[in-house]
Image (cartoon, each protein chain N blue to C red):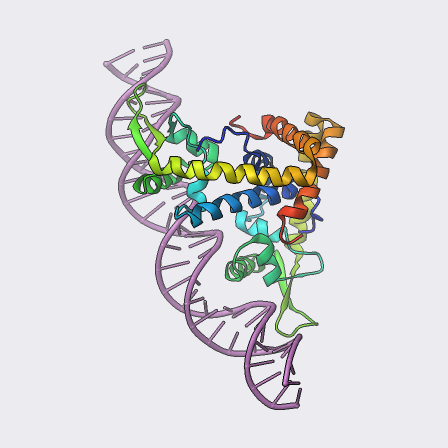
Length: 144
Length: 144
DNA sequence: GAGGATGGTCAGGGAACCTTACTATTCCTC
DNA sequence: GAGGAATAGTAAGGTTCCCTGACCATCCTC
């Protein structure tokens, strides 16, 4: 409404979205048809596999929503579902071939954007920023 | 996929969403039925009025989407549309009574959350964080 | 004053996400 | 162990969000 742009929440938002946009643009260029919502979930799939419920909690959507997104990602070869050997009710969602390709493509983009930020802020400030954000996560990420 | 949580983009996201969630929860408690998408737009309405096209650009949605959200906000008394005296095509979207109430309610929540963050990080680090984010905005907010 | 740019709306459709309800499996307790 | 509670996930149906494409009105420029 009139938070004069100094609202810290909003300040966090701009670079976050810039990063997201950049990564998604590169993926799209390379022929990866991944929607924003799918990418947000995909990003959280652990290399060794994640449970649907965990993914839903981290992305803060219902497990139904997460389930639907995983369906789509699975159909396009980004992830696969395998039974969880330690719990018969559960299934593990693991990165599949296409998902690994996308991750390999995304990593250098993230690095490039971070390098740009470092160039703009200076090494020291960038390091402080990252340290502050990491500590902030302790109290703002219920899932940390 | 496996960015080990040290992706700066993701680090920015956690506190951003924490702030958003807190503010929205207070608004909901106070009887404001504002959806996330509506709030994101509402937040950007300038006290003196904003054009739809500007709001859409800032929120990075199409003007059609923005127009629809403004319709909803207008119907519930959060904003009003008035003709732009300086441009016959345009109309200014201004905060209305309910919107001002919501803003008055949101401001102390933002302040409280920022105070919590300051308490966790320390005055100095918090100041550095805000300064860094402000400078980062120069290169990440196409609208700055 | 014609042509192009800009501000905004209308129509239609797809994606995302929610609530409620359900099955299957596991954990816990007595 | 044998209930019952909790947990992992799916199913169905509806709302919200947001997009593309097409269109009208007004402004600006030459």
